[in-house]
Amino acid sequence: MKTIYKINKVIVIINLILALTIYLGMLFLPITGIVQLASFVYFLCHWKNINPTLKNHFIGYGISVLITLSILICMNFFKSSSFFIWMPMISGICLAIYFLLLSKWQMEYTDTHHKPQQV
Image (cartoon, rainbow, N blue to C red; front, side, top):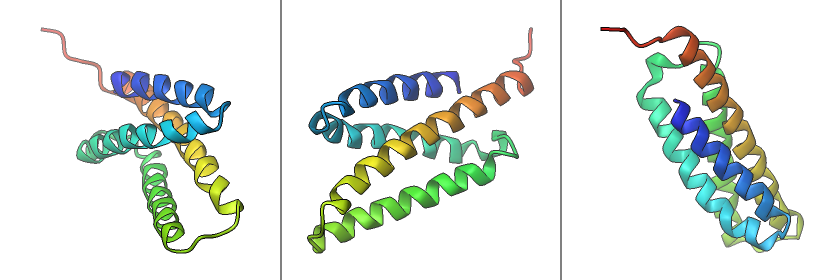
């Protein structure tokens, strides 16, 4: 879990720095999303090890990602105002930071509750 958190931390920091140039931030946002979706699938595969208080947050994250992706797909069919151009970038960055916090809290939970057994 530490590795997932560290990877997400680096990716989010890079994305936030690139977001200052807006165009590069928009280009890097899908990479951040792919890494975080892969991490989310990992968490789903290890659902029994997830902190019980975080399970609802992970479910909420998954639903939020589905809604955001649905809006992006709809935007391809309906050309819309500039609000809908900024909305995916802002929601993507918010979801990235939210998932970073979730992975941090899960890492802290795993470190305190699942100590490796010494031989």
